[in-house]
Structures are given as structure tokens and as C-alpha cells.
Amino acid sequence: MSLQGKDILLIISGGIAAYKSLELIRLIKKSGGRVRCVLTKSGAEFVTPLAVAALSGEPVYSDLFSLKDETEMGHIRLSRVADLVVIAPATAHLLARAAYGLADDLATTILLASDKPVLACPAMNPMMWKHPAARDNVALLKKRGMMFVDPVPGEMACGEHGEGRLAEPEEIFDRILAFFDAGGRALAGKKALVTAGPTYEPLDPVRFIGNRSSGKQGIAIAAALADAGAETVLVTGPVHEPLPENIRIVRVTTAAEMLAACKEELPCDIAVCAAAVADWTPENFTAEKIKKSDGKKPPAIALKENPDILKTLAGLGNQRPPLLVGFAAETGEVVKRAKAKLAKKGCDWIVANDVSEGMDTFGGDENAVHLLKSDGAAESWPRMHKNEVAEKLVGEIIVTLM
Ligand code: PMT
Image 1: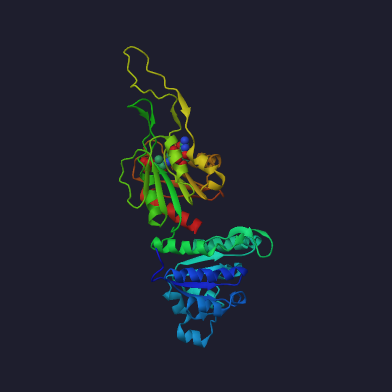
Image 2 (image 1 turned 90 degrees about the vertical axis):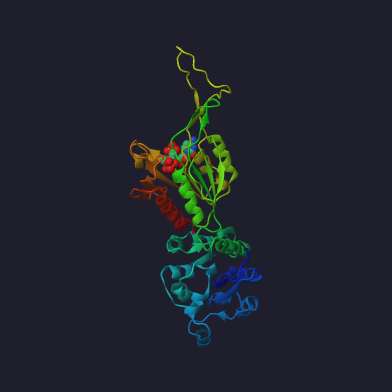
């Protein structure tokens, strides 16, 4: 994958990390991309227009009211010709102005006038990054579709430690590549893991304990994640539904196999556990078919507890998927019980569905769900096709991760 034929507009705002933008320009050019740069007034305090122009091989744009720039290119056209707008580094001040729709210099005017996807790479003091004002601005920009390469932890130029350093140019470059590789889709560069279907817990060579999950809901979620550009792997129990071609499939039978397969796929950015995992498995597997003996009592089946995949993933420390979504299949007091499950399992969101008899949730084409988040947010969605539930859920994921 190269950036041949791609046009990138790079906005360099004012922070000590601006020097890294020079390396980013070099990487884009080396990959065959065209990069036009906008240098803000404060950006020019850290890197010179001459260095940016020399590396990009293009004029550098800085002034909203420059007669020369406006006649050559014009700020509106500059915002139109790019395939992707990248802000690196993006300062707290620039993000705040973008969030409020200010247009008081060339960079913010372009952002307001642009209809192109924007990838922001913030860099700032860790206290500034954590400040509620910055958090709110970033959340608002993400909600509007701005993508982010979050700052990384490390030592800051000011001597403090924490999350605030600009991601390395190579990481930003990889994210740009992944964005185009995925056809410019929102979850480009992200890896998603989805579980679906039932698990079968064998009793003997012909019998098992299973459930009625068809896998439809999990498969639809995996398909929607892949459509949004995520590299998606579906770990599925025995299902008979057609499986999308653009996802990687790992077929398993038991809960233990499902857990092992999920762990193999880590790290990932998003995990959605939609499988109906058997809570118990027979204590003993009988290699010979259990015989029916006329007149004798049916055999008692001793069960032992299966591993809890969702809870295990939630407790994996730095291997824990940053966004972990579980499902809750309930037959009464759906929201109340799902809230308790959200806390007990330690996931970030839980999608609660009513699986009472007559609801047709297991195996049916439709679902009516409640989305509960660990920050207390809760929404109830009307009954809709499982594909629509999947698309809506992936919409929420995009807003959260971008
Ligand atoms: O497959 P379909 O026919 O389309 O039906 C969809 C569905 C009803 C199966 C799906 O929407 C759903 O609700 N999936 C979760 C079913 C379930 O096992 O729910 P639970 O409340 O028992 O488990 C809660 C969560 O823990 C789930 O995310 C489950 O995947 C997970 N779990 C449960 C037990 C276990 N041992 N390990 C787990 O990871």
C-alpha cells in the first residue's frame, strides 16, 4: 500500500512536537503522496516555512488574508482538493477552536469549510489533555466524525510525565495508510474481535449441551465492523448462517476453545462478545456413547463451570481490549439485571436483549435492545432487524473510538 495519487493537507499547529511533522511530510512524500501544508502562526514559531516547503516541495500556506495565497489557491479550494486533512500536532487551542467552529485563521477556516475527513493528532501537556475542557472538545469533535491518533505517554518537553506526547510520525503515517487501505472508512487501522453463536459442550461422541443461538446477531456485528474498515475476526461457535467474506473466521465448538481463540487474537481495539456461551460443561466426557438401560433411571449429568470469556477479557490488564462490549440475554427485569451484569463482568458497554419465550431473539431476524454504558448512559432502541442493530452499535463504536 502506498499513498500514490493521494492528496494530504497537513495542518501544523504550534507545539514543540511540530518538528515531528517534518518527518511525517518526508514519509508521505516517500510513499508517493502529495502533501500541502498549512502552518499556523504559532506553528511557525517551532518549524520554519522554508523547511516545510523544502520537504513538501509545495508552497506553504499560513495567512488567511494573503493576496498571493488566495490568488494561487484560495482557502476554500485548499480545503477541497485534499483526500484527507491531517492536523499534527493538534494543540489544545486549535482543537478548542475547531470544536467551537471558530474561523479566525487559515487552519480553522479550512477545518470549518472542509467536507473532507480529518485526522487529528493531539500533543499537549498531560494535565491539559486530561482537563475536562479538552475532554469535552475532543468528545464533540469525535461525535462529529473527526478521527484521532491519541497522544502517547512519556516524558514531556516541560519535564512532566504523562499522556500528551505526539504519536510518532511512523504511527501517524501507518494510520493514514490504513485509512486509505480501508477505502477511507472510519475504523481503518482498528482491529475488532467478535464472538457469535452458541457453544456446544460434549457429553459423549454424539450428544452435547447447547443453546438456540443462530449467530445472526454476532455475524451482523462483525460484518458491520468490517464494512466500517476494521480488520475483523469472528470467533464463532457452530452456526449455519452464511458468513461474510471480508472477515476472518475462527470456528470453535466449546467455551474453552472460544476463550483460547479470543486470547490468540489479542491485542485488539474492539471486542464484542455476542456469543451465547454455555455457562456449564459436563464434568466428564464419556468416550463411548452413553447407553440407555431399560428400566434404569436416566443418567445424572454432573456439570462444572465454564470460563467466563467476557470477564476474562475484561481482567487482562494491558491486553484488555480498550472497548469491550458484552451482551446480556435476560428473561425478566432486563435493564436491571443487565446493569448488574455490566458491573460484574467489568466490560465497558452491555447490550441487553429480552430472550423470553415468544420474543424470538434467539434465532430470529429482529432484536430490541438496550445499550447500557459503564458511565451510566443508557438508551433503549426500538425493535429492528439484527443488521440494523449491528449498524447502530457500530455507529456508537465509531463515535467512541475516533
Ligand atoms: O445468535 P442469535 O440467534 O442472533 O441470538 C443473539 C443472542 C440472543 C445470542 C445475542 O443477542 C446475545 O444476547 N448474546 C449473549 C448471550 C449470553 O450468553 O448472554 P449472558 O447474559 O448469558 O452472558 C452475558 C455476556 O457474557 C455475553 O456477552 C456472553 O457472551 C458472555 N459470557 C457468558 C458466559 C460465559 N461463560 N462466557 C461469556 O463470555
